[in-house]
Image (cartoon, rainbow, N blue to C red; front, side, top):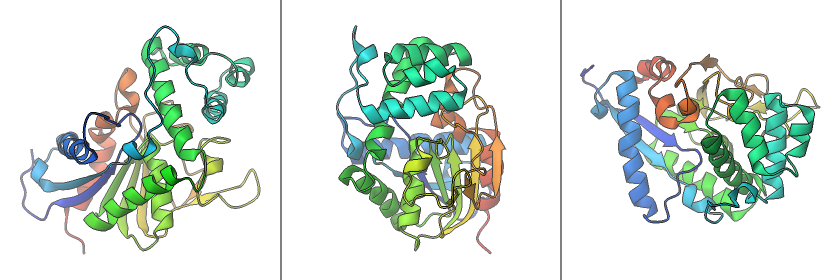
Length: 294
């Protein structure tokens, strides 16, 4: 493990779904994830954790949309119309048969989960739980462009970046959406490198069409754009990650400098942040930034 000297690399990490902890304060949750994300990132890069100065932009508590119900009737628990619309768009992009994709608006969640689990060789129960949590939080964030929850989440991310002044921002899953909007809302924030991991930013008829600022141009050539303060944008996706659909963002956004694919885990861990943080693509992307700015 490398122990070379130099100023630590300043990083801001932005999480995805499933991070809310009703039993702890936001500051306590944030502190715990600073330690875990630093450990996974340093381990993957082969450096001492002291080489990293990582802050964690925690916003999950700002998107609270009620407890996740678990029990004999939880397969029908997902009632949010927008969540169902997002699932339908997601299934269509995954290549689900038309009756399955269209039926996502009315069918119980277990059928969508069953198709995804079977197609990706996943555990059906874990897939169902993941779909429920993921699409509830994404729908809560995207429901209204000017909602207090959406504004608060992106302002929390922007405030963390302004406070920590990182060279690198690492954003995962839904966090890539929040970060993209936060950096556009605050063009004064300067970031040397933005890394998006397992990102759903380009999901057509779902996430992409609800972004702020809205993509410009006439369909099908509408495009989003790299935030003005970002010098370099690298996108990383596990080729088997069904959240990163489509896995390459350059077809939908200008200003992406590099697209990398890296199998981060052989089973359900394909989307876990810890596996992205530890993968070879992240290490190769971040290692040059350990050197001081020139």
